[in-house]
Image (cartoon, rainbow, N blue to C red; front, top):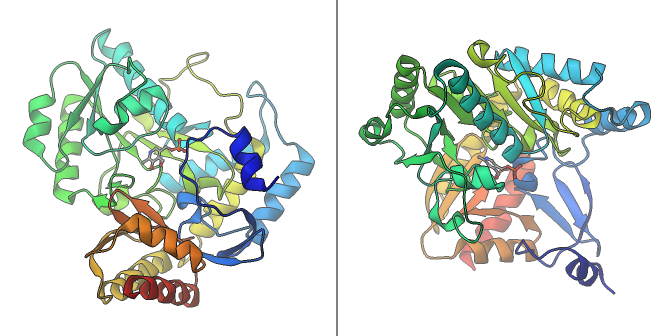
Length: 388
Ligand SMILES: Cc1ncc(COP(=O)(O)O)c(C=O)c1O
């Protein structure tokens, strides 16, 4: 029985997988079980921020495995304390709650916002406004928050209390801000929705309105956070400080992690017994995450992410088949003139290049430490496919 047959016999068929069995990775390339090599422009959907098996990251995770791999959250660990201190000091937030995924980080944010409002205003002020075309996760609650009808099927009833507003339309938002609203939740760059950045002026207006009305602003930075856009948080591009920011994907370099960060105003809302997670803040994730944050915040690193994002954009815009390039930093969406993005991604695998799609676009989320040489090699393959 092949690996794929065994897999298909035993794992639920919830993904449209490509027929490749990835076996080993090093830096920004990996090889499949037949020894074929692939340049990685997807980093496991923005997760392997330091590429495959970065030496210091791997050493930190391995040494943690050998020292203590898990404790329940009824005890303290030094590695979680150090990681939490690091995240809070880098982001300027007061406190963090650790989970294991983006959806869990968003669940925590939603619970926090509702409890903040309940504690202060009582029952009823529980609605959360999210944007049309947003994506917030696959749990029932985060699916309900997701502003795309295509996700609102099969699993009825969905969680109530989510209202959608059109992105970049401040009047539409104002018309929906009644006395039942406790929070507005947004992605600065809609990732799954097609790599679309929000307008700066709109975001600043949203932040101002939220502040005036004591409505919490929640930033879902699960995809945009941890250096992806060239700043540690995408909110820095927009000059706003949301009350709550969620992180996941790239935060621990490939070990499952989710983080919900709260500012001073709401850092003590979730009290003993109101939230929890068995695996949240797991020592392996914290050990890996510490190395990720240290490397990403080292002098010059984020400037390089910006420069490389710009380099990608300039090279892509010169390609005949490329109609437009969207995104921020190394979160890149490519609209093609005539070719189908999904077909290009499938052909790229044949030619040894891993890409992603987002809606009708080709999406790139390369490892943040990719080299110019690797960018050139990958883009050469990409252009050949586009021109074929
Ligand atoms: C913006 C955003 N929020 C939440 C999620 C869900 O994250 P996870 O799959 O880790 O639950 C994703 C995943 O793509 C995302 O892009």
